[in-house]
Image (cartoon, rainbow over all chains, first blue to last red; front, side, top):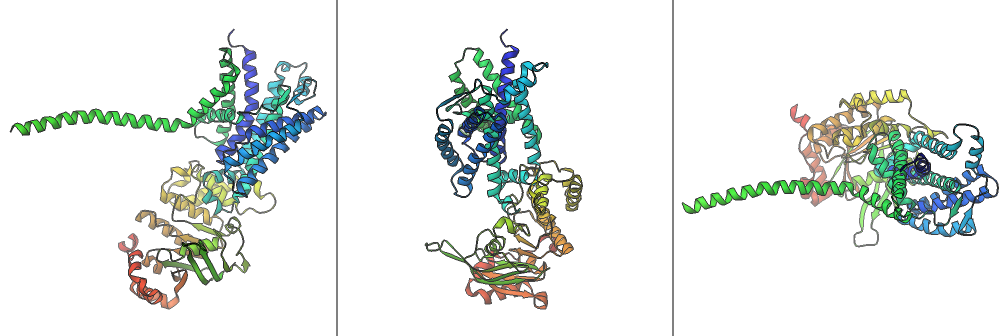
Length: 321
Length: 276
């Protein structure tokens, strides 16, 4: 069979883990309106820290350590943006560059293998040994985390702090006159985003049982592609629907990738595919506008041609008089 | 009570664009006062408001609210007890959030204690929002799940007014908040302002370019020029005053600049006044 269940299941597992990063970007990019470009490094940082702690024998602690590392990264990013007034994109790039060295320092070398390490995945495998879900233990872990995080995000965005974060991204002038401290909201938003990205990195490292220093390259584009697919699918709805949309978008993206791979597309082509998806999706409003303008212009030109003919006739008539 | 003593602010200090915006300004506003402020463009009206609400820190002087020194308190902390409405109706609300969510932000700013940041809006609060919206008489109570961006400028300004007063502020600053609205809507927002302010006895300061409005509303009128208060009338003196008196007073205070300012200070009557 061309598309097997195993293929889809694999895509879903990855999609659900990547959805956590897409949700982090949903918080920072869609809600807070900050372009957080430190995602690549933060993701690898989470994977590296998580792997080191897991290898030393603390699989649960690894998850929290990865989140803690992500929070630190998000905090530095936020500090540069708010207190030091560095442009948000530049701050992300600076943090991202610095994290490369930090990640090497954490890992001690450029790759780590976790083949014999106890991780949250192997723990779940043991737990589900004789149940019908034994074959889907990876998906169970991924779904568990994604659902918990989605619920947390949904509840959080309804609190005063969550609403303030949304308002910060929507209208900064209003925020200042509503007793909201934009420095605080930006910092909290980026820290939570960092924690989610770090956790996703940790999960993915444990999922594929290896961590590579370059595993995060291009991650921000991939996550943005998932986010944009999700947001486009559901449109401007309530936050709950949009969160579900983002998770769905991430899974859909992975399924598209899986199918593309079946067509013997080299794995290296995927980055280009992601880049094209993001570029096209973000430029969609502008493209629509151009098409609309051309249509109006064409219709007008046709009409004007008739008018010009009519005008000529009138002139001809008057000249012969 | 608001107290400003010898407040100074100079913009672009040390450059050719140096501009003294506030020049040793002193002002006391008593509780329950409704002060209207007039003055030509660049007289320092909006700068005074920004100094009070903390848009910038002043170079010199003291600003106190209810006996508390707020001179160096940051803007977001002052806005807990100072409401501020701008001329631009787009400035006071978040367009991509619903009416309900906007009100929730305004309402939750009063929540105190360690759990304040994680507090949520209850069902009962939502009912209160609905009642408050119904008072606006704009049908907004049935559109609480709509994003604010879909509302008209007048509706947004009315909503901003409601948000600024949802939790009664110690001081309400209105910076030409009806100037960008059409005459009918401006009237509606203005009468709403008058009602809310008088019902709850809110201390209020309002900038206007309309001389009639300046005398008709409130109990005290200030005129500003070059970062100074050149006229301060209340009580009987104000009651017997006409727009022409005000212009004459302005001439005394500001001297030769009257000719320019006569154009800027509109003496046109508002729609409701014409109807009467």
